[in-house]
Length: 155
Image 1 (tube, one colour):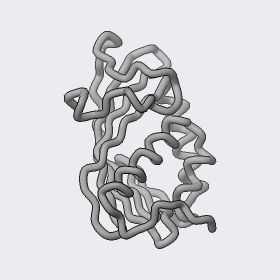
Image 2 (image 1 turned 180 degrees about the vertical axis):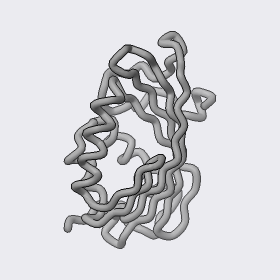
Image 3 (image 1 turned 30 degrees about the vertical axis):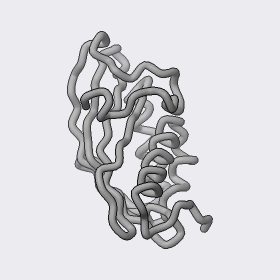
Image 4 (image 1 turned 60 degrees about the vertical axis):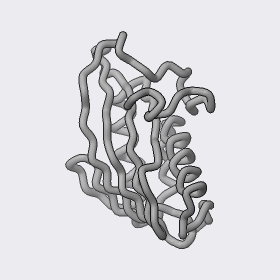
């Protein structure tokens, strides 16, 4: 198992760094790479799905990004303490028919001593939007440092 700094206990700076690292990885949309940030037996709840382990994480992300096209995500630190971090997030995507959505949610994360996430609990709601209502306009991949965050966008 490899270490994934920063490590708990988190400070405001390291918790925000961990949230941005997760955002960057998810915006890369590489399920194998993303799964390496989690323990081999990581426990997830995503919406109404419950699963455990990296193989299940990879399979979930493959399904997710096959459905959620042109996915762009912003995460923002909500709070932290010890080995736990809570973030809020929003992402925009469209389906195969070209209909756009903005998905809003919260995640609760718990980390091991190596900085790997051992538990992820996500609650998410989808809002149908018009393409003209989109707020996330960077090229696919990492959100540029000068692109506004959730609070800056009024989200």
